[in-house]
Length: 300
Image (cartoon, helix red, strand yellow):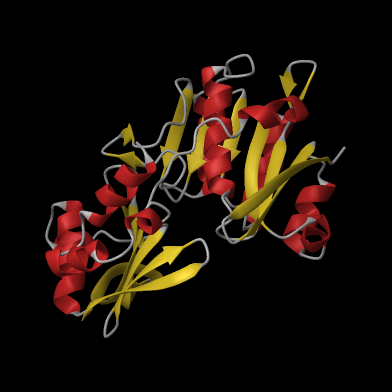
C-alpha cells in the first residue's frame, strides 16, 4: 500500500461532509497525514509531522462520530461500543479508531462507552526496508542480539519494530527466524478477522489483544519462537515476562518511551529492565518535525 492509498483508505470511514473538507486541503500534505481527529463541537483536524492542521468544514457532532464508527466497522455504533474494552477498534488495512466518551464500568473495567466525545483515526502506514541497514549493528557472528527501541511518542518506534520483525521473519539481511509477537494493542500486525493487515513476515506468529506478559508467555510455551517482540514496555509485569523469556534462551525486541539512556535510568521500571541485562543493543530514534535520526548503541 503506498502512502496516498493509506490515508485514502483510512478516510473512507469519514462521513461525506468531513471527507469533503479534506478535498479542500493540499493533497501533497495529506500524503503525510498521520491521524484524523474528530472532537465534538470543533471542526476536524489532520495530524501532520509538524502538528495538527484545521481541516475546516462543519463542527463535529454526535451523528458524525456515530456514522464514522459505523462506516469503519460495518456495524452499528451500539454494537461496536458494547465490545470496546481497550479504547480503540482495529480496522481493515491496519488503521484503527481510538474512542473517548462517557465510560460505563463494572468491577473496575470499561464494558461500554455510553456517549462518544471524540474519535481519532490513526493512519496505518508500512515502511519496508528501514530495519535492514541496522541489522549489521544488531547482530554478532550472524546471531541477532536482543534489542530495545527507544523513542518519544510519535517518532516511529512501532513502525521500526514491525519492519525489524518482518526482516527477521523473512530472512531479509539475516537468516530467517521464527518470531512471536505479543501485539497487545494491535499495532504491529493489526489482525483483522484473524488476518494480519500489516506485513510482519512469513514466519511470524501473533497473539493479539491480550496483555503483553500473558501473550509472551503463551507464545513461549506454544510456538517455539527464536525471537519474541512486544511494543511499549510500561508495566512491571512486562519487565518480568521479558526477563523470564530471556532466561529461556530466546532473543527479544521491545520498545519503550524515552529520549535517551539517562532518561530511562531515572525511571524505576526501566532501570530494573536495564539492570536485568536482557538487551544487548539500544536503537535511539529522534524526531524533529518530519526529520528523523536513528542511531545504535551497545548496552553490553
